[in-house]
Length: 112
Length: 115
Image (cartoon, rainbow over all chains, first blue to last red):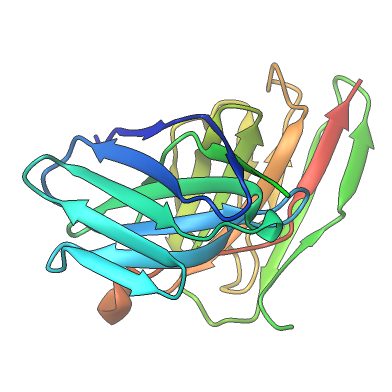
C-alpha cells in the first residue's frame, strides 16, 4: 500500500518568514495530493490540493509543488502570520482509489 | 454550516464499557470514514464505507465496529476489546464515483477518555 513520509514534525519560524513542509510517497500510481490544516482543537480543513498532471499550484501565500519522478511534494507558505500556526497534514491518493494516506503531520509555530 | 456533525464533543467512559460515537452528514456524500488521531501519529484509518450497508476495515480496525444503515449516518462503536481507546476520533466524508479524488470533509471530532 501507499506510504507517506512527512518532514519536519515541528517547524518554528518568525512572522514574515517562509515555511516549507515536505512529503514523499511510495506508490507511483498516486495522482491526488491534498494538504489539510488543523488548528488546535478543530477539524482538519483542506487548504490546497494538486493533481499529478500539474507541477505547481498557488493560492495567495500558499503553494504546492509536485515532483512525480522523485515522488515528493511540498507545501510552501510565504510571509507567515501567527494565524498560520497549526498542524499541517499531507496526503496521497492512489489512482483508482479514494482513500487518502496521510503523513504524520507538521506542527508549524509562527512567532510574532 | 451544513456538513458533518459529530457528537458528543467529549465522552468519558469506564474501562470495559462499549461506547458509540455518532457521525451524521448532510452533504449527500457516498463515502464516510473514521480516523483516530493520537499525538505524533497523524490520522489513522479505522473503517470506511463507500455505500450503504457496506464497509471495509482500515489500518487499525481491531476493537472497533461500524454500521452504515443510512447514507447520512456512520456510527462508530469502540468496544472493550480496544486496548487503548483514549483518543481523538474524527469522522469524514467525500463524494466518489465521477468525483473520485475529492478532498475529505471532516467533522469537529469526539474526544474519548476511558479510565
